[in-house]
Length: 558
Image (tube, rainbow, N blue to C red; front, side):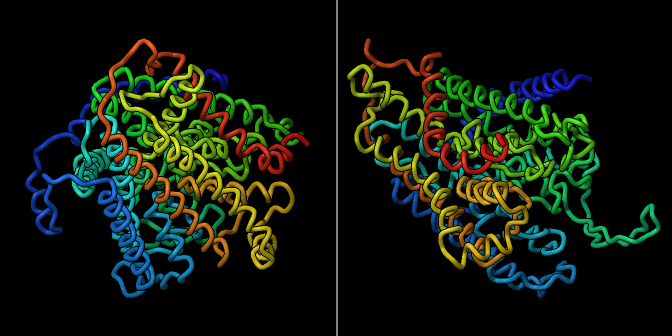
């Protein structure tokens, strides 16, 4: 089948499945977060943790809940790794070193799932299930909770509260993520993804040698790693491993799982604010940017820049034969336009310019459609900036969904927009500016010196700051410098922007709604959709073009 026909059919299949889920799932999530009734299991849990589910919180109290819960998560996951050798089902694995334990704890609590280690050789089943899988659920639920809090800021009128974090956390976990993850795990089991506690098996290879193959509870972890836009693999090869992703149709299922909630959340947004057109407008921005990225990525990989790929007929180095170039580019686009980071091919082996596209997907803020929750609140912040710019053009006080965008809101939006890029650029710069760090990075971490080595470091800090988790795998990040630096960047990149978002939610909720007038910018029409998409692209270009010129552009244009 011609490559572009395959690409079109693959994209249409994914789009049809997502379109079928858009309204029912979006409406269901809106009901989950607005219902006044608690389930019996939820009421019992609230009594245990001492939460009054009918009491709402100010943005400061909500923020304290987010930060306290996440801090406890980091501590518990760190401790689980440090005592792994005492736990059942450790498979004889030793305790994880302290630096790597910190990096992994920060990674999974921040929904990044960056892995500076080979999972099947480092973690036993207890840490995988009690540590990593639990964080796959709750870190995703935290992201959705923050997004819903911002949506409430637009929907509420003259109140000082934005919901209850503990209620949003529990409902997002048990009413949304758990049921869909169970269904997803069953489907993957049917497709051949393994689920057992068998440990390691020694098998005889075709050549007559022996090889030790690990089993494990993979399907249950695979489903939530994708659904929650987490991305951490049970195996080092991630979704390129046949135990995680056996066939082309399981590859399609995994793509749908990681896009399912992010593309349905705009519907939830529209329902809660009382105008479904606003949801469609946000969806249109997300879908347009996704489509643009997929086409560019696929074209660059099919072209196979370089003499060797052109002679071979395709740039297949690092790509799984079961999926081919198109199966790799649609998965790679999906994982890096969300904050998933799962891979079914090695991004370090992509063509120079092709490898720049996953990097750009993260640099634009992962808003096409973005991570579970984080994509929605990220694109809403961009929409606020777009409304402000539109107001400047016509000389009016900007308004979005009936709320005035004043100095406080635009300052918070501006800090949100520049904070993550600053982490990327500062982290990359310090890796080469500090003598000890430079010796570690250039002498130990970078396996491909030169321009490509710089791209590997840029990609690592971009992935960490944007809580993605994918990597140019030629970089050895299990060093004291990168474990620490990337861990700190992941924590700051996740929680500081959340503070800005929650502060904005509190400010918006305290306002009354202003009536629509003839001068109000319509925020559901193509002009506004184009304006938001333009802001996304222009901000990313102005911020990252210089560093891209030193890395992938320099490599690809030589």
